[in-house]
Length: 113
Length: 113
DNA sequence: TAAAAGTATTCTAACATTTTCATATTTAGG
DNA sequence: CCTAAATATGAAAATGTTAGAATACTTTTA
Image 1: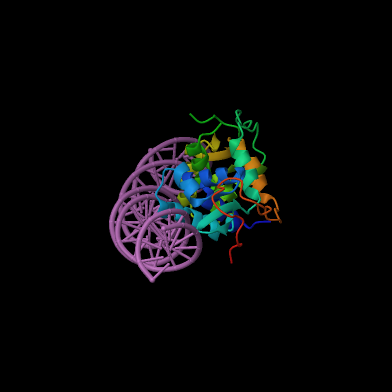
Image 2: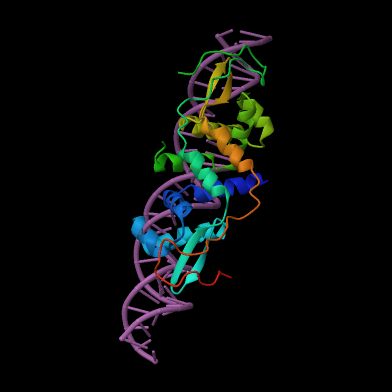
């Protein structure tokens, strides 16, 4: 299993709008840098840095095709993670009815606000 | 569905070792601030800031019990997200065999490195 | 009602991430 | 070979995040 540190690193690397969009595109298939350049509104060096970050963290890799680099997904957790994020989750979790853990007071008290 | 911005915000808020541990504990049940203070090695004001961030993003809430605040999970995506992160994912995704998207060259070329 | 316990808030300095800009590298085509 | 296309790299400026310290707030207890 991933260590706490690895989990956090993974989350951090994903947690950026450009990178989420890159990954969402890559779950659909291979794309080269200029494809992303059109798709996302971002300048090329900046895009390259985001791709570099994903690469350095083992999340994506690429094939070289002439002067193109064709990126694809490597880390298998990504599609699952993105699918979860796509979910609806309309209902809040049920508020706990008693205080099984702390047992320090006369819980439950008032609900905040 | 969550917007791109909401997804990223969620990921950002979770992506910290202290906050992941808080959330992991909360999936097991209610805990008050001093419980976390023992569990995580962190000073109280800092802990309170992490809890505040989670609160302000609608991820947790609390009951008031005297001078205790008993925190619990609210956002139902959290248990699912943590479970995914707990998964093993031993195999890389299969590398693509051809270039269905860009179609600009004689892909596939050489694999990097 | 004063003191203590439990927790939150505010400010600031340190640190990390992100964007931008300039430039480098590699390959294809003339 | 020279140039253009596709992409990467590095450094600096802009921005965001975190930890720590001091302090404030609220509730309980003596």
